[in-house]
Image (cartoon, one colour):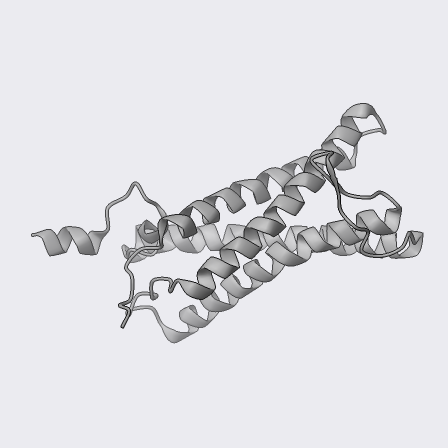
Length: 189
């Protein structure tokens, strides 16, 4: 019989923050490189962007697998049902985008005729044949999904901060290993 944890596990915390940092960094590199003229620097940034996206995809698979076998902490009892529904939906969308964004980039790269070579060492199979029309559609889809992800990440961070500073509950603390839980400090008294 398992009890409901009060914090996320260390692997869940590490994967959360590692993926978060990689998503933000990959997004920033993507914005920066998009308007550069063709040059060796732009080509190197495209490679790094692809490597990071494939790494996010792999880490997202690992994270989802971990989550399937490790129960996350419950949301606070005081949280209203509509807030719980939004939080659950937001998490599902974030997980979905952690898969769709790298896959859309990989598909776009394949459609443009540029094979993804992970870290310059391991060629990944093209997911579709070269097709400029599909490449243009996939570019739009990739950009749309990325902007959607950033909006959701900002909403996710804002909700965590609201919980911490306004609601004064443990929602944010559960994902930050260096903060003490308010409930655990109450239990120690």
